[in-house]
Length: 467
Ligand code: ARG
Image (cartoon, rainbow, N blue to C red; front, side, top):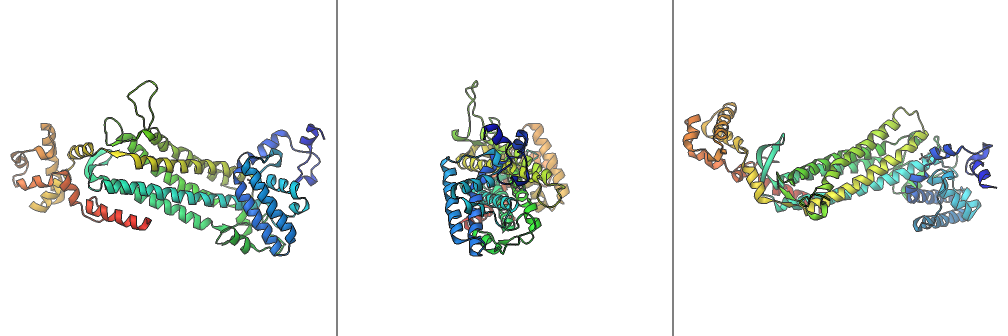
């Protein structure tokens, strides 16, 4: 056959009823091999489990199963060596692998597809892939939590300003701020664990949609592929991608958390704040301004949620309103998930590196913590505790003292006792003991509060749980 005849020929894998081949544009829009080749290892693993099960059930011979099993390993090594020729006219990874297998081993290769369909094949391949990504996210998050815990330990009693509305609120400890992220990333980790647990059912054997008339053993293939059990409904098995959506949802929430610390790093590393010094390893210079050290990694991490959430919205929109069961729309699931997963893993690794290498600027943090009337709440609390004032009234009196200090261009601890008493006569000089930042953080001993002793308890709890 000439090249032209070849391209017009009906598909060798399913073209029995077709008199002519697809239009070139049809081939282009239909093919997924350009991206689903990433599923090759999962595809081969699934096929090997399927062939072994077929033989164990007496559906194919042991000889055929052995030829298939070995042939698939050869295909695997061809792909890994870069010696495999992926063909667009063979559409996807499933047909590419099967076709090459049949070229190599003949008849036996054609028996592999007994009792299954590409619909359950792609469902199992993709689940295996997403399950691996859950594992990667879980270990990436564990490493990130450890990096935050090390920072927290080093600065458990280092004071810094705590913010609301990005306005100075109350002094907090660096350790407490770092441990806030440990809580967030721990919840992210548990979301991936939950998603993994739920997705860990094997759709293989659902066949096209209705199950199969061959006496297959779905429990055996499920176990061979590390699943907890087979899925219970064949229609559901080939038609849902909720496991991928759960992964993307967990990835989006995690990327949102990453973006928040990324933003803090951008702010904190600026010349106006100077709360942290980022290492040279995670910053870049400017081609024109020699003094610049730009927090590019942090900025990119701030942006990653854009594409990860974009992938999430895309897959929801692809799946919305699809009547059961499989529709080709679902082939559009993979690129979204691949891109989101790649960027999440890169983001977790970059954040772990930045957090490990950043240097808190202790003195700047302390100065900032002490400014902006940050101990005003401590003063109000003192009025309540010592003078028995109702909190609302204490709030008002403190507000007047802040206004007085602000007008004088000084901070609260710099007011004289006489100035204090001009606002409220019963104030004594004991008040000055509560206006220091160390006192402020040390006094916040409530469970989950910023006091260094509480922070150290949380650090110890997390260290024990990660050990
Ligand atoms: N490439 C397809 C996908 O990614 C595999 C399943 C194809 N099934 C079918 N009936 N055409 O969804």
